[in-house]
Every structure is written in structure tokens, then in C-alpha cells.
Image (cartoon, rainbow, N blue to C red):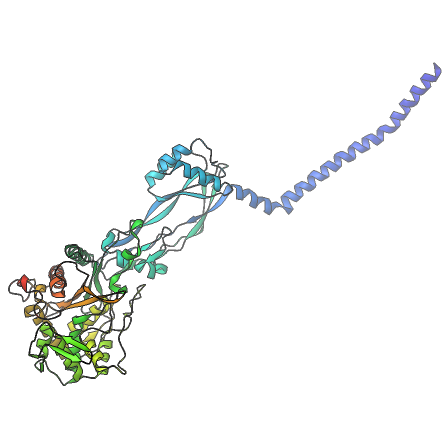
Length: 579
């Protein structure tokens, strides 16, 4: 009994003896934990503070782009030809919107999407945080979608390019892609000028990705610059309307109209067929997109004869009354035969232009050197860039005068063996209209008259203009006479070139001219490709288009009526010659 008591007493003494060590151990553990917590707090608040702050903001704050408004393109009177309007873009976060979400069918219905395709896209991009649903839709549609409250679906503001004049100005203005980057026309060549500089801003979002606060811009967006064109939308509509009607009436493959201001080189109208509506992305195939007035080359045919006459007059060896014998109506030059529509006999230089005699003008050229002819052609703009800076411009071909054979000089005199575009031809006729000065052509509105270059004497230009007036009054261009304004111009008809050379049954009908004769204000060039009806001469097809366009254009420009006492006889369209 006494032994048991002794053992119990010993154990109590042992427990009392161990108590301080236990207390110390607990105290050390508590202090260690406190130190660890304090150290961790120091690490988080001091050492890792910046990292954690960035991580926190990354989960709540986002940087969003601020789109810049693209500059407006306007005509010479301030009418908008291309504008950017605010629209909405719908996008989704696939991480928040699983492909099996029950709201997807309704979302697809309202957003006008295919539900199966939408599920497939969400599944394929499940690891991403951004997926376009619909780009640049009307705000009303975007509002309907957002009102569904589907998780992970958001909208943002963008801009969409719109072309008020549609296909009327499409070949000049061009168009942009969905990201507002120029793809064709002036939208492409002036893309840097028109495109604004995008900005960015920081926004605060909640845990569902919804923007709850705009924290302000990081970088301001800067809108693009506006672009003022030389085009007159009234004249552009007029040219487009007449050309389209004529191409349809003649079953033609296409056509072009170019109109220039005589005293400035400004392009007032430039229309092509076939056309495209730039607001409809489905129409943007290559055949419709190109600006034929600048990209397409052709042999100018008889429309170049006035410049051969000008070279002859400039030589001092010819006057408008100088007589040339064109009998018997053809001219043999080695293996080549030059023909007229009939035997015109003896013709003055003026009558050669009026009757469009190939034999006559080739005999005139044979009296001149090939170098003299080539120099004048080059000085009016053939064989060189117009300097307009338009994408896809074709320079054309003007043979060098070195070693030109006599037959090549003869062919050159009536428009074969060289190639031009319609704008080059209009620029060349401008020198005849304004007294022999060549101005640079431009699609931008000029605030000041540009410095021109004299390429022929004023007297030569006046004499050639008088010949061209008689072409309309009594020659191959009678159908250009619309009875109100006295006009001047030259017809042309050339074979189109195909894969195997000249196509015997395919023609290009041409007319180039100016008006009114006593004080030219406007130069216009008309081309019609492959008219399929029985009429295909320039005097039959292109001259009437020219007359209608010029008559209406001069009225719109408030030019006083002159000349043309009566309407021309419509049945005399192709009188005499190849025009």
C-alpha cells in the first residue's frame, strides 16, 4: 500500500517537473507560427506587392482598344462619298460560355447565326478568351443579343465604312476591308491619310466579365483626315447613268467615261461599266473592281489623228488647207495595206480629220519624221504615267522613234502600234482644248490652278479644235451634236485584241472631245467595249453618249448655250471613214 502511494507521488513530481518544458514548447510553436505569418505578410505586402497587384488587376481590369473614326471622302462640293458609322461587334469568351450551354439556340436565333456551327466554334476555341460572333452589326441587333443576358457574350463599338453613292463612285473611291483598311481605289492609295490612330483605355470588370467602370484612356484615339476630291457628284451620276444605259442598249462588254476640267486638270467624273456596289462585299470580283479608265489599255485608233495633224502644223510644213491625194482609197506599204472607207480623192489636212482618212493621215506622217510624231505624242502624255498615284495605273506603250520603219510611222499616225488608257487620252485632248497647255491630272480638288507645260502653240491648238468642230458638224461625229452646245471631237473604232491577236468581229467604239467650241470648259472621253449589235463604229455608239453627257454637263455647269442650230440627223452617224 505504501509502495503504491510512493509511485503515485513520484509520477506527480515528474509531471510537475515536465510542465515548464511543455509550456515552452507551446510558446515556441505559437511564436514560430506568428513569425511565419508575419514573414508571409511581409512577403505579400512588400516583396510580392507589385506582382499581386498586377495579378489582381488582371482579373478585374482590362485594356480595351478605342477605334479611330476613318476620314470622310467628299466630292468637290462637300457631298460625302465614303463615311464611317458607329456599329457594334458581338464577341464571346468561350471559357465562360460552354458549347453545351442551354441558351445557345436562342442566342444563335437572335444573332442570326447557325446554332450547330456556333457550338462547334465554341468547342474548338474553349481555351481562348475571345471569339468573334458577329462583326459590325447594327446597334439594334446587338442590343437584342445583349438583352438575352447570356454569360460570356459581350459587345464593343467599332466603325463600318459606308458608301452613300454606291456603285456610281465605286471605281474611284474604292473600298476597305472589314478592319477599315483600304483595299482598292483612293481608299487604298490614301489609306495612311484616311486611317485614324487607334487608342486604348482601361476598364474595370466584375467576376462575370462585365464592364462596371471606365478607368479612363491610356492613349487617345485620333480620327483620320478627310479627303476632298475633284469629282462633281452631279456629273458623276450623269456619266454613270448614260454609260450604263448605252452599254445595256448595245449589249456591250463594258465601257468608260472620263471628264476633265479644261483649265485645271481636275477629274470631274470617272465612270466604268460593269460596276460594283462597294456596300455589298459579295460583288467584289476582279472583273467589277478594276477602274478601267486607268488600268485598261487600248489602241486609240482615229482619236489620235488630231495629234498627228498637230505635229504636222507644228512642223511649219502644213496648214489646215494643205492638200493630200488619198486616191485610190488605199495605200500599199510592203506587205501592209492601209485603207479608207472609200476613195476620198484630194483632201485638205482639215478634211482628212473630218473624214477620218487613214490614207491621208498616213501620207501626212510620211512627210514628217517618226521622231517629230513621237515627240508630240509624248508631250501630250502618251507613253508615261499621269502621276495620279492611283493603284494599278497602266502607263501604256509609245514606241521609241529610233529605227521606226515607214509603215510603223504610218500606223502610229492613225492610232495603231501604241496603247493608252482613257485618262491619258482625256489629258491629251485637254491640251487641244485649253490652247496647248498640259496640266497634271488629279482626283483631288485644286485650290489653285496648277502650273502647266506648253506642248504646242496656241494657234495649232485652235486650228485643230476647228477641225474637230467640223467633225461633229459635218463628219464622222454628227451624232455627238445635241443641238444646244457646239461641240468638237473625234471618233474612233478599233479592233479589240484577244488571245490570238486582233478579233475580227469585236470592236471598241471611241469618242474624245470638248465643249463648247468657242470656250471649252470640259473634255470628255467615251469608250464602249464590244458592242454586240449591228452598230459598232465610234460615230454610231460612242458619239451619242458623248453628246448627251456633254449637253447635260454644260447645263449643270451653267455654261451659256452656243452653236448647234438644229439637232443632227441621227441616220448619219458613221459618215465616211474608220471613225
